[in-house]
Amino acid sequence: MDIQPYLDPFPLPAKRGILSDINKETTEKALAEAMKNPATVAGELVKHLLDPGAEGNDIQARHLLHTMAVRIADYGRKAKGNQRAEFSIALTKSLSGNLPDRVKAFVIRQVQLCGGEEVVPAIGAFLTVGGIADDASQALLAINKGSADQFRNALPKVKKDIMLYRNVLHGLAELADKASRKSFLEALDHKDGEVQLLGLWGLTQLADATTLDAFLAADGRQKGFARVKAASFCLQLAEKLPKEKAAGIYRHLQKTRTAPQEKYLQELVAAAL
Image 1 (cartoon, helix red, strand yellow):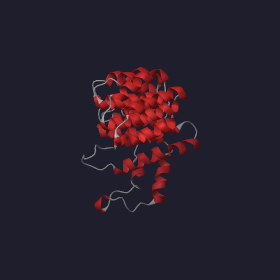
Image 2 (spheres, rainbow, N blue to C red):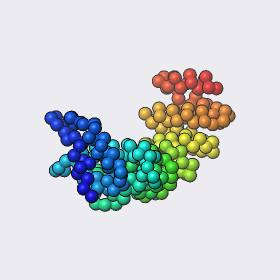
Image 3 (cartoon, one colour):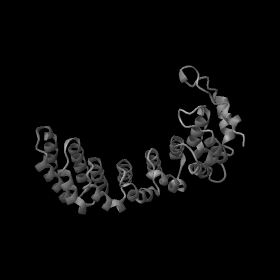
Image 4 (tube, rainbow, N blue to C red):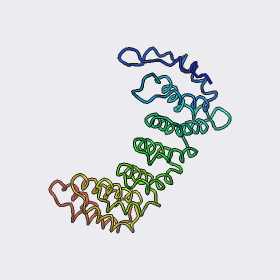
């Protein structure tokens, strides 16, 4: 398929690398033509993408692909079949090819705009890939449905890579995944302070009163900025729990936050009690 006629109306950088002289009428016409067969066009556009810094120019292909990702939902509603899903699947299929990592990351960011549950497993595979995992995580969180399974399955595979481990824990906490209760509790005893905070946040999201003792014990071990962040989690958790359990959190803060700069916490706690 020759997609050059779809690309030509899109502008190339002029002086100082700025896109200019955009003809809205011609670009809209090219987009409308591309949208008649979006999945096929998407597959061809990916072939035109280049690793940033590589010789050549892929600005028009990136521009068109991004525009299609933004608008495919509206076009899909007006057409027969599920064009949005077909377009998203075509993009994720390209990820199995021999593309540079930064190109794969760009494609995943486009899937984030239009993808649904149909692409979750394909995106989840990149939670264990350094340099792409952050983009995969953001896409999964945007899609949401079915994403928790992907984060949960990736967790044991990334425990030896602290950056990937943090990323996956963050996803599970953001999704308030109840099945990850044990993983959040384990994170409280991790040697990495950021992981401990993610464990606290995950438990805050779950608001499970049975984890309160472990939660408060971990809060008591925090120092510096982590101590400030942990206090915030304590207050958030207290708002979610029954009054008697919340009172236990407030008393804990009353006993542990006694420094002059923590006076505001004493005032908050006094008002809550």
